[in-house]
Amino acid sequence: MAGKRVYEAWKGSNKFLFGGRLIFGPDARSLLVTLLLIIVPVIVFCVFVARHLRHEFSSYNAGYAILVVAVLFNIYVLILLFLTSSRDPGVIPRNLHPPEEEFRYDSSVSVDIGGRQTPSLQFPRTKEVMVNGHPVRVKYCDTCMLYRPPRCSHCSICNNCVERFDHHCPWVGQCIGLRNYRYFFLFVSSATILCIYVFSISAFYIKVLMNNDHGTVWGAMKESPASVILMAYCFISLWFVGGLTGFHLYLIGTNQTTYENFRYRADNRLNVYNRGCLNNFLEVFCTKVKPSRNNFRAFVQEEVPRPPPPIISRESEPDLGGDPRSKVEDDLDIGEDLLKISQRRNIEEIDEDIRSRGSNGPPHNTSEVDSALGSDRRAPTIRSEARHSSEGRSESWEIASEVLANSNLTESRGHVASKEVRQKLGGSF
Image (tube, rainbow, N blue to C red; front, side, top):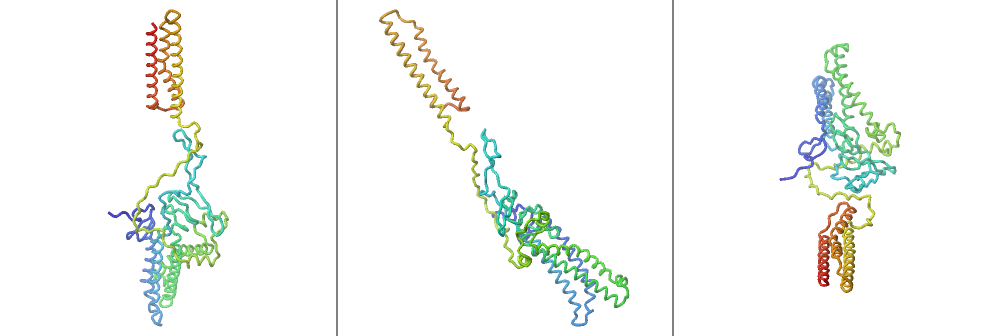
């Protein structure tokens, strides 16, 4: 079974048609309203105005040109609308992982792990890049896990980072960015020209009606109410599309985006992208459109798991105390050696005392022998106390089997030494 394609696993809010060949914004339904606002007035114009002007010009039937121009220009506007709304505006692909080269450990923000303070893994929220010899600060995007290039911004509606982000236009249902800004401006300016054309021809038709049959404006308006409606509609639309065209002419001349103009208007900061009015227009209209960074029809590559970044502890100094386990074993060995020496000295003293008393006086009380043997019996207790004290220093350490074996061996040797003492005492008595 083939894997998913990129557009099927897309994490943004976009909508795709024809197997990922067309990409729209999440509000693509508003595009239907825009189509109606363009197509319906042109149909009304062709039926109720342009059709009656076909024979008003005697030479070469020039009246047909009015109808043909309206239809062709309307198709041109629709093509520009399609190119604006159905293509990648300049979406930057998301990273699967944060950029490892930007990892850093903030010692001021630490996390308590197992009783040890470890520094928290942090990302620099901003970094500086050079643009035309000037430093520009770019921000890190938590959603896309990347540092946005200059003039890039994250669209909250499409949920994507878009290069040279201008704005999200609800009328075309798409973000306006690096790859479709040219077509957006041509669409708006062409719609402005279309409004002016329809308004002018409708007014001309009213003039023709006044000259032919009626001598007053009101009579001509009653004869063609469609012309009046079209003139009113185009007049209102011109305030919108005409004003938008003028505003974007200013933005292109100064090399700004709508986002930059509204966000940084009060900062009076230097525009590092301004290359002069002529070069700014050439940059928008005469440069090759960059290819898309995304192949929406490609198959999704399987993600290769990567090991997590190493967590560097703040306590990076070497431990001078060494391994606590080996320290406890050393303490027990030293205690056993001291115990052996003490037992050996006690046995030698008792042996000498028995010999001296066996030759000079009555036999010695057996309680002394028992006390000597008692010291041997107390050996496990001493070793147990040594173990508990060592456990206190190492907090939570279990005694190794080797240490217990050494302890049992020492106890067996002590019992053998006690038996030898008893034999000597029996021989002397």
